[in-house]
Length: 487
Image (cartoon, rainbow, N blue to C red):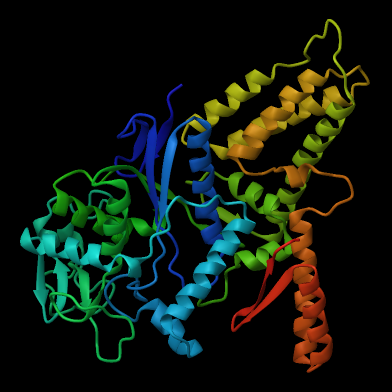
């Protein structure tokens, strides 16, 4: 069966045909590193992790690029306001790059703790200023951009297809709908490719137009095309990035190259908290770190993948507890199967109670249909029912058959969905990784309470004892994290 995915550009499902046979080039918008990642980030990156994993399961050679935005993303998500990283740096009285480094590593830690596989390349905007200046220069030379007082703007009236992704039309965009009208712009929807840096601005680079910094949109175009080519297969991101970010990426990239920018656009839906939109300003959001203090990696991945990537996901304690119950049932079934296999033997004239290949085919069929992970999870539970029935039947168990079922779980629940790994399946009295993380976090919380009460001697003793077993505590303004280096 062909692999079908929903293309946000055409607003319909299409057969996936890669630019290069057997290869997939995919770019997903990464985080702006000015705060700890939240569950909305988890929804996006766990969803695309499963997509990338499935491509590899299907024997595609995948080149996965995910950027790190460490400059240029302004507070109104367009051309006005303050750079989010500089704003955070001012609040914390730190250097902007210190903020970017700290939260970039916070993001990498959270992704690792969620079982998200590393992308092939994580380009940073500040490391690709030359490529961005070259792209802006090309747009100026081709007449798609204009410079005013050290600012360079893209002229949306020159690109006839502007709005083809979002469905918005230039003539329908109201002047000043989002922010006050900028008199430098020819049209209120023109967007900044390069911004002039004011004297107090802490992050700027020399350019043909004076000292400044790149606009948010130009960064992704420059970095994606550098590593994936002028035309590549898949560009992903959150639904909220369709406009203006992805719309502007298309306009500037296709104007510069004269070629289609991306063949398939994929967008994951949003996360709500107890039915309300996530918002940092109102405090209605949950960081990944806080979620991992209460729930395991398996529970959080199960919760996210039980919802389709294009569906809205509402997070609540009740929903997470239900996910925890479901994940535990799945893990218990696989552990029981593993134990049964270790004690089984070859059964003469064995007749299989069910065919594992049929479940594999069903799993692939639903994943081939726009990566339908909720239906894939349902297939695994049908398999679990059959597996439990056989293991608990009281019959002589055939080792080869049990091994084939276990391998099926490892391929589907493991390699594709990332719900299981060998340490999770080990049930010999040792703690799982998630359990160890919870214990360490509890110890960190106790130490923090001791420090607040000025009981520094006891707090230092905890740090010392943890250090002796390979756990290093790292105290930062945002809190304490840890690194584990077992002997």
